[in-house]
Image (cartoon, rainbow, N blue to C red; front, side, top):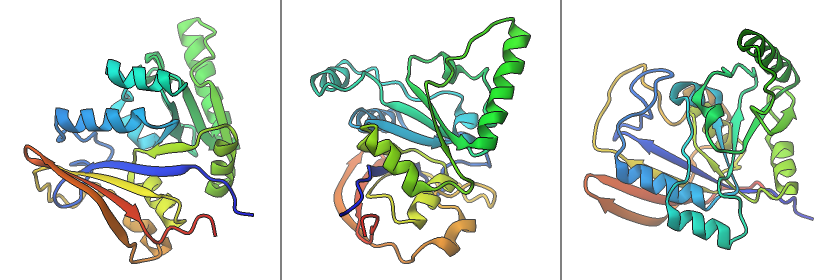
Length: 243
């Protein structure tokens, strides 16, 4: 019997030379409002999104669905207004002061036993500084071994009814999932610039290339141009996560 795993869609904005930011741990600020609208629409179709610790540390916030049409569609589909926002951080090194924790979003932490203890210590220290007892930073916790066992993590998420999940970065997270052939679809926004910096992050982590089954074959499902940006939608053909 085939294992049930969520359908994973990676959603990424990149420069023409494949960069997702102009420096290490720096947020990408080169995509347009149209791309943000596209991202909001894609997120509205999902049960959960996952992004890495470096991504949330760089941005400090997540994208909240605000479009009334999209919110109404989620209501009609009996979905919560916002998908579960899962931070993936093996170290648990997340700052409780981030604005992310004041956003009206359901939040989850995917970490290790050691990372959970680290996070709990950070919360304890922060609450002591603020003379408070807040403990609802994350509503859900997903604990795995280190390195993360993605097969088991995804089985757990499926069992909790998270059937459609978006992967929003960064490069280590995307590369780790691609290395295990767990990503089903890919949305790429090609932004009209060349960054060209050696230290600028690519959307794939070169340190994980050795674990990738190359080449990764794609089938183009959709392409559209809006002003200077190109939106590409691919199906990943050599996905064998159910084998």
